[in-house]
Length: 131
Ligand code: COA
Image (cartoon, rainbow, N blue to C red; front, side):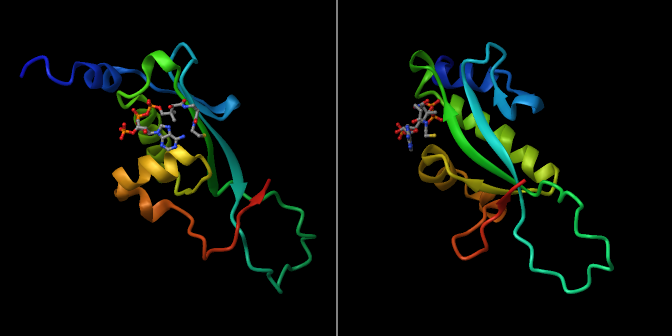
């Protein structure tokens, strides 16, 4: 019993770093990572701009989680899930929504972690745009 889950325990102990400039969550060696993009939320056209020219840059409101990668030697023990845990917690802390375009996140991680579904942009919602 004491040794059960050793590989999963190793993944759970793995440090995950946020590299803001690279828009990545990654392990300290950089070999395993989750790559994201920042998008602006789709906004309805406002009819009352008050002559500001509309030139303001919208704040990033959406994290498009685009790609998750774990090297072959470390797969299958929950490391990708650890990267996702960090990225989703980051989005929630900052009040951001999530657009998961990585198949691992949409097909495997989210069904196993449905507590994050409230952050996820659904098919029925307007698509966010590039910033
Ligand atoms: N799409 C959906 N699910 C996938 C997947 C994919 N492309 N690749 C693996 N999975 C599933 C596995 O079948 C496994 O399921 P199981 O637990 O029922 O056996 C589960 O993910 C493993 O989860 P976890 O241990 O958290 O993931 P991992 O650390 O092994 O890493 C990937 C998973 C996808 C990041 C890794 O396999 C990888 O880097 N693959 C190459 C790049 C890639 O295809 N990335 C995803 C698309 S962006």
